[in-house]
Length: 202
Image (cartoon, rainbow, N blue to C red; front, side, top):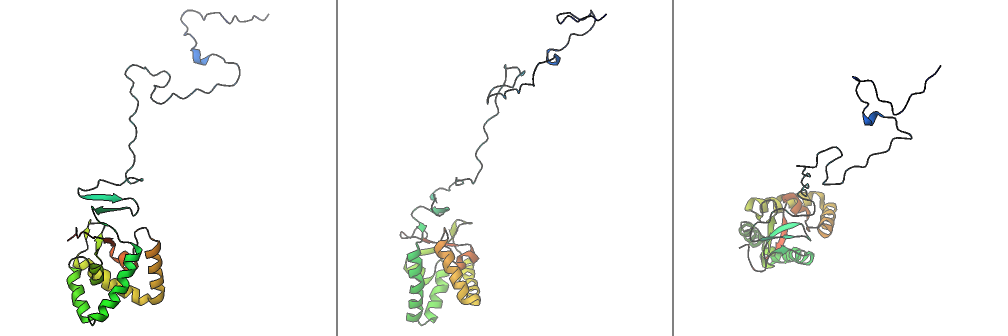
């Protein structure tokens, strides 16, 4: 003789009650909704709950770092430059190139070399100086030193001369298409050329 169990029957005294979450459920298990942001999860006491603070934006993702006093961030070139100074344009750089050839002829080359050695100490060259431009080192936020200018002009010229026409073409393409208009010589010395009409850099 079979006896049917009463679903509402209570277990004998001394036996633990069946937990509600272990009771049989009809149908597939229902997914639990995840708690909304800023609210405690199910079963977590609401009193004293504090949501996690927002994660700060990572440095370097579309935002410049701290800008030193007297300087500004140029979004077009991605450079931090002194106030009143801007990245030299392509036309001005091309003009300086042809002007350097003219000055070398007028000064009989020897005068141009002497002039260049003096100008290197000021972070510029004869042609750049005439057109109000200087060589800038973005990593150090200052004009190029004599050593940097020597590396830029001597080593850069040697590297350019060894590879000859191919290097000149590559340097020209880098200069014309690059965001910071860096030639191969600039890449070697990690420099850029800026326009300083107010002679702020000295």
